[in-house]
Image (cartoon, rainbow, N blue to C red; front, side):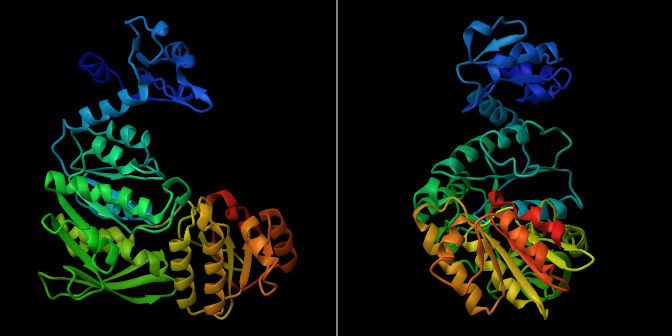
Length: 430
């Protein structure tokens, strides 16, 4: 296996998609439910790949095509082998909500001083994590690796590949319940990051306000706390949400209060920013560097974006949704001072047996907050049959027809739903 690993260092990098071959790369032939990368190994060489790794023996020629028992396992083991060539801090970040935003914020802060390797987009799974780690080079001072999970033991698999020295769980909520089976399954899997950090004697950053996280943290492992509690080593407080968040923070080792005026909306993003401040402070960035790192970050990709059109202001948070994130989004929306607020909430997917009660709870929350709006998706449409007080549309197309006629103007509009509902397609109407 050592010899096959060393092939990587003769190439320009790894590629797993034969449609995007770069010159002199190492092509790794992965398999999926609907594709077999082995079928494109010869094509990859013809397009300019230096070598190809295959797991179908008859394809190997031991000059340009090399056989391994399992190409995916090879990719993961290669990534771990490569990661261990670099004795730098590796920060693992996971959580049910906010992990991508937190990762981007931490990167924005740390990049004010260091050269950072950071997960791109949400390449946070069993393939994305190895591909990220294989980009490590001598220029990097730190690495930030986002870790996603949608079934038991996913995080354990990823920490064994990335071997993080520092860890952060943003929160643990009811996401991907279909895959985990229960919230207890989510807790166990997310907690595998803490377990690994404890095992290697690393450092944990955690939100002291979150009782569940506080219970999971191994007390003998070095841990740095943040939150609103005065007992936090880095304590923060929201000053205003209009809709961008302005907050203060102070550390346990100095008395100076620092203020940050972010370009990020939502009370729910306050803790994500506080986590980035905490990590920045731990790695000895100055308050000025931390302030620039947070204040210069502008959300994109439908994650807590503010879009101002000629007729309305949109809060676009349509990349993902689960009960915890929707509850937080509605709480924050309710806090924003605006005379004409309107929500558009899409179905929350992958909740299994919790689907109906979770959606009913969201409906109840909109009523208790006295918020006006519409619901989009088959689940909400089904519930609307028994609750005439709400307006729901089974599809985004039906919602679009209604909104095209209504032509809202002068509104602050929240769009929040699972990616599969596609609420971002409604933007043009506003």
